[in-house]
Length: 463
Image (cartoon, rainbow, N blue to C red; front, side):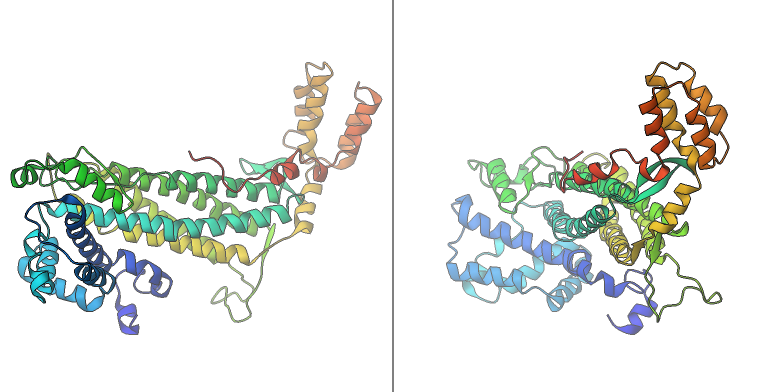
């Protein structure tokens, strides 16, 4: 992107983060939307020629089909600019696409015979809803899924390498029963994969059924044709699923499902960003330094967890938009209002902010090294967390007041090892049981954490 445009851009996606958003431009830019409108119009024309058996449809040679394919494949900036020039006259974006195609079909006599069938029996929303369906499906399958899966792969690798590395848990911010750093990373990976499976399971719907969803014009022009069947087969030829019941617009319920699933996934990422930020702040993770970087403009010692903070901020922006989309888009007055149009133009903004967050999180994870010494020091300073184990063993052996005994010993106190061992030595328990408790330390009191990490599957079931 031009440096001046980047510096004067209103959105940081096109300014500060422009280089990181290049992959989003082909899908979510105005040019990307126009290209998929052109693709939809051309594919509908080709489908009618090949499959509809309309008696008045002119024959279309393989040469013309190849020309139409090249028209779609070669669509770029100059072509999009021409469509926009036409739109400046029509003040209608989809009609501008139709007129652009009419211009191109005028380039040859065989092509010109197709002109009456461009945009045949279509309302603008027939074209738009398919274009957006293609965009959102590609965004999910080609950008979101690979980005999140890369994070999950990295988290699983980190989880396995730290599966047995004990750390102090904190519930309500207070010392709690120990876990391992690997188990906590595995939790994130499993949640991510599950939400990703939910997003992938969303069925992408589309419609092509005319002005109010009833094939009104279709059946007047060609009464004997199975228009619902043709429409369904055309939509399926694009890899989408037909919605048989709509008004003028596809009602966007599937989009709400998509955006809600993506928002849930983003929430898992946001939770992870905050937790990892916290583990860095208490020293459980160290960040590898880059000599050229500056952490603070005044404090030279700082190495700030900026990747996790950047991710948190971008995820918040993304989810604010995604929640609005899922609440707004399924609501339309009677058979059609246009309030969804301007909202849909922002779907790329939400998705790009989420992808930026994924990129930041992955960069942050790559800089992290666990600090077992720091974690061990916290464990050693908090022997009172073994109170849970002791009172549970006492319960097993019939002590009805087990909880109360340990509450009196440990609540609000920081025990020394000898304090707890003296207490255990005086318990009315079988000697082998008492000896086993005396061997227990905070660092060894991690339950099945390490074994659970070993069971982590890469693809849990969808929600």
